[in-house]
Image (cartoon, rainbow, N blue to C red):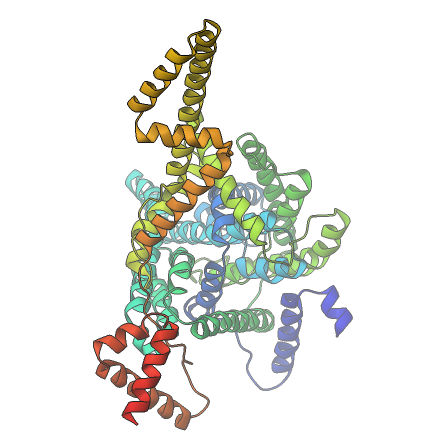
Length: 606
């Protein structure tokens, strides 16, 4: 199986297993199984989308948010209307065996235009493409599902109402719902992300329940958005992306690892079930095979996606610092994989649409073509085109520090140029996040004040340099004057003038003159002032921290669990019964005298 697994993606292998199992069930008296759309959207899809949002690299997504939104919104609109219009034009010449109207074919073109995140994750994670390419393809696949579902629901309602019964108000309402559904789903995701963060913050004493809340609240966001007819996919994805950085500070390391592995396990299990049921449904579903319609759909999906990617990248490259190269555009065009979301939508088409069996067959054919042919050949293409792969290492400390310095530098450049770009927004958000959001949503975060110590040190250095330069000029002028007086045989008078000058000089001037005569370097004085300033700032910002006991969330058996809880409660009771002096000494490091005194007291008590 090792050569086969290297040749075929895991998704295609699972579909083959499902096909074999479906054929066995079909040949026996047992009835076949189908992938019901209700089961798919309510139970199988949420873990995958939550996994995608929770493990989404937020910084990379924000740096490419312009291209991701362009591909997911305008790209999906272009593919939907281009594919639907081309198939409708061919239908006018009676080239297909089943007829359909305008809104019925737009329903099909909307669902077939969706790049599936399940298939993208299954294929692109195996070939390990670079982060820039992965975030654009995967971000498009994640967010265009919300766009696809909105278009699908709108065109389906139009098809059920009938074009003759529609008014201008209906079209305007449908266009407005496009934005309401997407933004409403994002708002629900933000609300439940805040709820999850606050829940984990104030339930630290019941740490075993923290992972439960982390899984339940995003699923509640998904169900809430589904109940009010908003984008449930966007809701759970936004919830996972926002809650990650806050809940990690509220739970223990063991709980964080449990959440991480359990999320991956749920997502992988759901992907396995989905692709296996795709194979099962192929055997058991009712099909209407139309070769011309299938070939036309495949051709239009490939050609219109390539045209859309090339045109959108041409526009984006005029405004982006990091350009989309030709090989990147080719991989993005070739990596538009369709998957289970398209199948889940097509099986939920109302039975009143007579062309539904033909749509189901064409959708399965497109899924098989993209998952098998494109999924198998994309690895050799990546190797042949020498696409940059993802680096399998974490950034070093130096890289992290210099990336932060680069952000600040670019923010300053944007400020000087009078333009507000990505880096300015990043700096403003990080400052607002540190001062407002983190203290509210995280346990050990305090409101941070602006640290101007660097600016103060720079100001002190500049002021000191100016003072020393001025003192040097004064000394030079004074020395020249003394030499001139000496040359005129007025040495005695010059000495008296010097004494009078010393009497009128302030102690500050005398110290500065003494320092100048000693020949010390200005950098040593600056380091002295910086050290004193850092020490003073450290004394001002030092806050005594409470001691936290590191204990396991769950013991190996119940006896150990009971013992750990009894020991913990006894320790808390003994700490409360300690006198104030002992409690104070426990909170600081004992000196040698403290240790001797405590030993004497212990010996005396014994």
